[in-house]
Length: 340
Image (tube, rainbow, N blue to C red):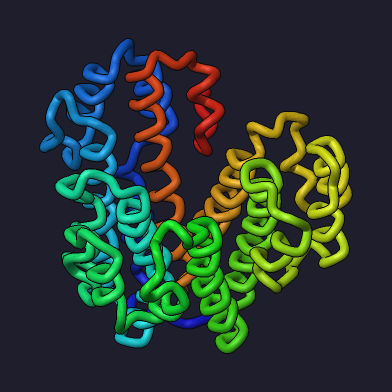
């Protein structure tokens, strides 16, 4: 059974909001700009939300502005929801809270310059995740732990209290944080008999497992047993047997042969550099299908937020690609939007 919204007109409102985002033609025009300054000028000339950006904005400033735009959308959505729907939206949004926690932990872990600003984290915690407000200003592991003490993520870090932060495997920490989100969302989908959400989260888990296996084999050289411990112990449209085959694959050709015999054969391109882009495209297109339907439930909202977030990432990748003089083809390989 679907979770009904208090105001069915939200469907119309979200579609109107989405019509104000960049169109395919505007994405196409953006990628044609000769340098990052003119790319930013173009954005500022077509969308009110970008007018406050400086003409020489760097990546962090761009990402921060895009996050501000998304948060503004989320706050508009919240005003249309019943208290019950707001509760479930908050759980869905916890993936952004996890993203904030990851960003701060990476900064501490890498011992970055302590006055480095995490503006994009600050705007999320000031507006949405007030329980961890100020986390962007912490300077050491102890302060970090104190700030997340009342969150469900604290237990992930408890085994490392009193230890040197460098003894922590950051990949495993981030993996465990994501698992909390996936398991929570899957439980909600089952409890609420929300088949659309179950399908979306189940697919995300499958694809995350595929990417995690690839990364651990490629960059971390984990043993087969270590890899099995890092994946989410839930198998939706890919069998446990095929997951084990992926773990045991000797090279990327063998990895893709296994994938080609699963429902996720669309990910197979013969180019391992494109795997993560293909995963992002797969999820983006799935969300677009949900958004195109006239659905009056939370799934429509979740799809809208995911779509906007993915397109925001494309905007950043286009401008940064132009800034670093990447060829058009190289930039296109980082995008989910199909630019003509």
